[in-house]
Length: 330
Image 1 (cartoon, rainbow, N blue to C red):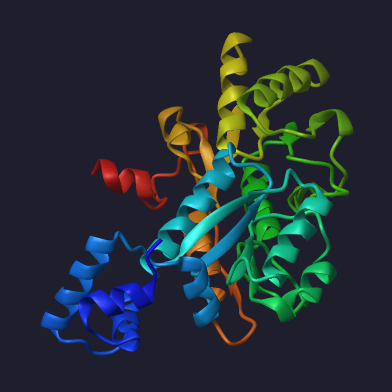
Image 2 (cartoon, rainbow, N blue to C red):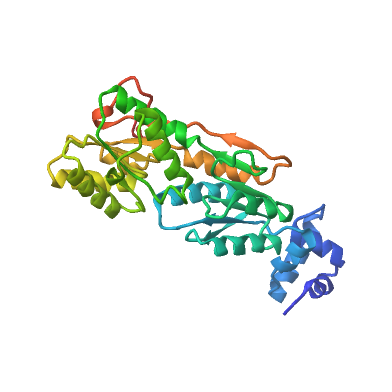
């Protein structure tokens, strides 16, 4: 296998000049560059990226820790991070954790051993205290509120967004509400904030039979809708933790001839527009882009990004602003 010395010998230029061409650093005349590139091609020489990373102290890679890859929420967030990384000549590597704490610590150890220039946690099961322990090995950002912990983050105030939507429902006379959450309130900050928002608005804990936990797919939405109607024949609203789940719930409501029940999703995916139900847009694209940018700041920054309740179907308000999907159609 050819090395940089072979390229220098064949091209007739010094190793330092060849290095400048390989790494695109410093001035090299066009003629010299062409001669070196011709020698590289003749020798079938390819740059050793590992050696380059060691010499520069950078890998130009970031790790993106996410619990699931095949989930619309994390797909949208990851897509934004990838686009931001690409625009800055970085690669983003997906690190699936399945909310396994040992796995998440393993990813932190990868940062410790310089496998990445930084880590982005889209969601996590380990504590913020554990993440702080690894800050000395490289930058880490989170796509959720990190509160008083010294960890940079880009996030929406989820409780505020839930309270806003539930208050609208209450003001319009809705009282019989079923809710879906992704995990138990003991392990999920979002689930805990959902139930706390309900209590804040309605002044009481939600009926446990009207709270469907471990909701992740369209099929969970189908199951939840049937469970809620079996528990409360006067059900008025299904407040779900994602648009795909909301779509499943709406489909089941149609099968049960209960189109009168309002369905609310989250994240403003195209399916919420196509099936005409309201959704909470937590601005995942903006969060993903900001989370990547914050990796390379010299200070701890908390970047709040306001959510928006997009009213469709029975809740549609003509005074509401156009969302991104409406703008595309216009």
